[in-house]
Image (cartoon, rainbow, N blue to C red; front, side, top):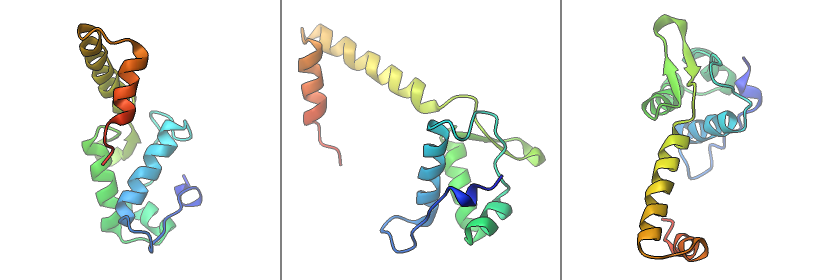
Length: 121
C-alpha cells in the first residue's frame, strides 16, 4: 500500500510530524479510503515512503493503537480497526448531553446554543 502518495506532511508546520501523520491516517479512515481490516504498511515501509524516521511512524502507530483506531496483530502487521472508536464514544457523550438537556427542560436549539458557545481550546 502506498500511503506515501496520499499523506502530505509539512516539516515547517507547528505540529509534530508524528501528529500530522496520525491525524491524516484518521482522516483517511473516516473518509473510507482506509476501510476496516485494511493492512497498513509496516513502520519501516511507511517511513521509507514518507522519508521519515522510523520512530516518527512508530509513534503515530502507537498512538493510533492506543486510541483503538488501528490494531497490531503480531507479526501479521497493523490493521485498521473494525470500527471507529470515536463513533461509540461520541454517541455515548451525545446521549448523556441530551439526557441532561432534557432534564433541564432544554429543546434542541437551546442545547446546541450551549455547544456552540463552549470554548474549543
